[in-house]
Length: 228
Ligand code: ATP
Image (cartoon, helix red, strand yellow):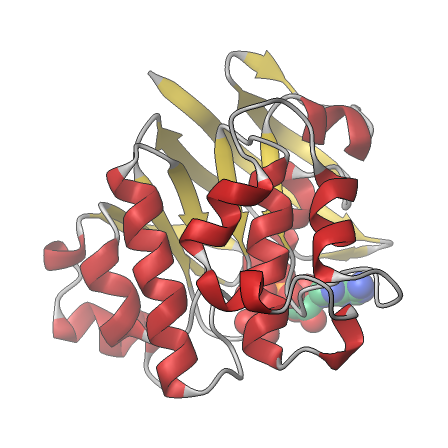
């Protein structure tokens, strides 16, 4: 079953066009990477899915429903969970309060988030602004999961995090995948990202230029589309 389908998407910021034809789809149970160099349109694609940027052409459908014109809170309620770039959580709430504030549905509970991120459980009564960057990212993922999303979307899953914490995040993503969670993920560290994903979409100048399995994204293609 196709969970997310994006076709020929064009999105603008005012008069300036950022997306020129993005095609992307995520099947239920898949982990999909959205890739591309800086400024190629990954965040804009994600913002378009969540109703945070306004597409001018093309379509986005989720679980068979067109999202065009829908407000962000309604889109989220359809079962889309976002872990935004920069991991925004409420700074004046504790870890526990942050998680409970996000709760919707019954599958994901504080208990389940604690099992996924034991570190977060140890800090459950701490205020968010006292957490390390990695702990904040775990909390941001935990918050998104508490909404029981059918699709979890991570923009820059491990950016700026210490290597040991990055491994914790990837381990959590693998566990979620094993549990059947559908995931769309952006990350710059190819060596960590590629082994986790089923398929990749690469953007260049706001358009999809490659779709395929990680083993089809050859070193030559990586160099062409993702090299610096
Ligand atoms: P990065 O890896 O640097 O986050 P990205 O692939 O996520 O890059 P986007 O942030 O989607 O890329 O940017 C796509 C294009 O849209 C870029 O040319 C960028 O300068 C432009 N852009 C992004 N946000 C805005 C904005 N708020 N207003 C105007 N232009 C924007």
